[in-house]
Length: 432
Image (cartoon, rainbow, N blue to C red; front, side, top):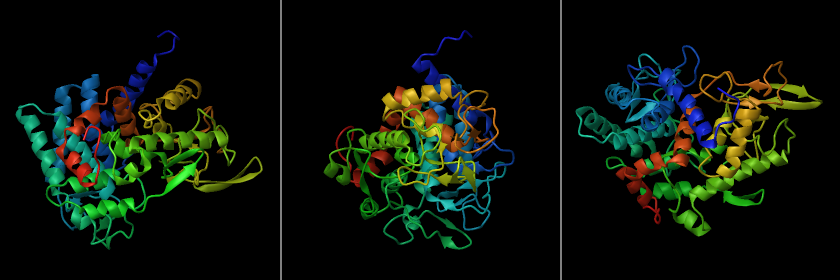
């Protein structure tokens, strides 16, 4: 191929395609489970599996996968999810309609004594519902997809997951019961509350959403007023499935904006933080930003150019209060594409064409890189994570699509459970 630069559209489709290959190659075709990260003997992540289910329709529309192959893979996943053991036993796949965070890739049983995760189950259920809306023909296989997706969603007992509290718990373990933390403060749990409120079988009470929203923090930062959450992904994941443009709940009506505009502001705060660079990390600038929950070079403490620096491994990094150790997550920038393309596209151009962050990688961007961390590396980006994560690959595929065609948003507008959940949460206006 000649050295001429790709158009923006071609660059995005190339990135989308190579990112999607993760789901083709890091999945067990028998049960549809998707590996958490591309490491040997690593377990499946139910969130990554949900993102894969939502990505198959995009792959069909883009020609990355045949319609027949997508039906086959989706059916294998949903059949496994429906038929796998649900119960209080410590080696089940799930309980009360929720699933363990990590599952064995082969057996589909609980891995690593992980928790029954309410939010990761949410992304899994959202992926199943996406498939149920997209595969809408009268063919028996597609009818089965719709039937299974519906049954899997209806089985989740959201009321049980409250543990009699005002808000929903993070999860449960058979060894010692519910985790002590609940979903409070604005974060990725928006989708959890919407799906919980929309349930026709075990719905959350409307007071649950009000209790969650009462824990919000409205902040002024770098010239922007916005609903605060530090890690960038918290402003993105629910938006993969729900088009928040023009619809408002009581909180946003009082502020005069919507959650989409809020995510735009949060994206700008990220860029402004990198330009300001208060902790003086190497490389931060207008084209080098994106701080989120991610992999990292630590844990260790090192003196770098006379400054004592603490570096973390997997950690919920955030802006502007930290933690921050100089680690940038390119995927999180891509996932803000619908909100602020005018700053995301130049940053992606820098990542791809200047920093060469997609070169020689099987699935596009590795999870993170860190120019401050002292490492002997031939890579101009310094320390680069050795891994790709399914949780990162999915938002790249899906948010590029929402930016380009709005496909996932359009599909989910036709999901009655989403509309019902939004209305019960007090949303109105726009497409609702």
